Amino acid sequence: MIRPVLTALASSLLLSAAGSAFAQAPAATTVKIDYDRSETWLCLPGRKDACATDNTATVIKADGRTTRETWAADPEAPVDCFYVYPTVSNDPSILSDMTANDEERRVVEQQLARFASKCRVFAPLYRQFTLTALRASMTGQPLPGGAPANAPRPDTGYTDVVDAWRHYLKTENKGRGVILIGHSQGSGVLTRLLASEIDGKAEQKLLVSAILAGTNLPVDPGKSTGLLKSIPTCAAAGQTGCVVAFATFRSNVPPPTGTLFGRPRETGTGRVAACTNPAALGGGQAPLDAYLATAANGQDPAGWVRDGTRIESPFVKVPGLLTGTCVSRDGLNWLEVTVRADPADPRLDDIRGDVVAGGQVNAAWGLHLIDVNLVMGDLVNLVGEQSRAWMARKP
Image (tube, rainbow, N blue to C red; front, side):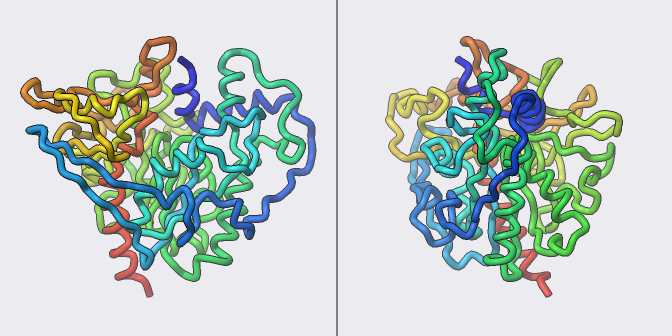
């Protein structure tokens, strides 16, 4: 089963695959996207769109009792969130078009919508390297003939996001603090944007924080900076202007030889991959405040509790079941997730989120499919604390 693998694209793999896929692409001038048009955005504040979704969660306690956790957006949120989604497009071309399909809407429901309780949410569409093209490349049959005529260049997705970012700054920001949020391909795009458009620039004063999930952010050994020279990794909840970066693996399935995560893809710098545990920025092991999709990755909504109780809410919380800690070993850094199964606990003893191909778990990807879900509650709480700290320090 290859689709889950492709949905979980690592930004490093994206870049190499994109280069190969575009080898025969025709040279042409890329048409710029007009981000003044509302249809070029997946999510905008105050609009009934993919981010205006039901975030209700069922909390399943260790004794099997359930409670219902409601949720509401904050229309008066003092800061903004700017999000770039991972590889999800099923468009039949190397680069996606600018039409939002179910896959783009589903990913913002999973990874962004919950943040609307703490920030105004902005999510531009962009012409990303598609799942279709990656599938073709990974099976040795790259798509012929290059990309769509209006988007032939391999860095088109990045330049689209830069245009969306600049449009946001010009028309929407008005001096507000902003959190950048990305996953996988989206994290790769945002890393590049941070390095070229924010690090050491005037816009850096607006940065509340950046959340880069499912990626390998290069930092110098023993330091909090590296590729980003003046934007450190976050070490405390009240710290602002910093970055959270991580990739998750199970404690009993650590990164194997040939892993896609845990080390930077750049060579010759001596840098290592950053690991920031959103549940314990200062280090150590901590419970993870996960919001897991009730029915995703093959999960049965009636399988969360052994008595077969069917969960009707879109999200599930299982407090105490998951813990996380950053691990450094053999030159790799990753966020290790432990499932604390208890035979006496009526809840399920494991979670779904591994990348599976041909019926086998592909350990090189870790828990990439659910990087964000595993720490969603921790990230939302962190955004709230960082926003309050940024507002208190704002001139």
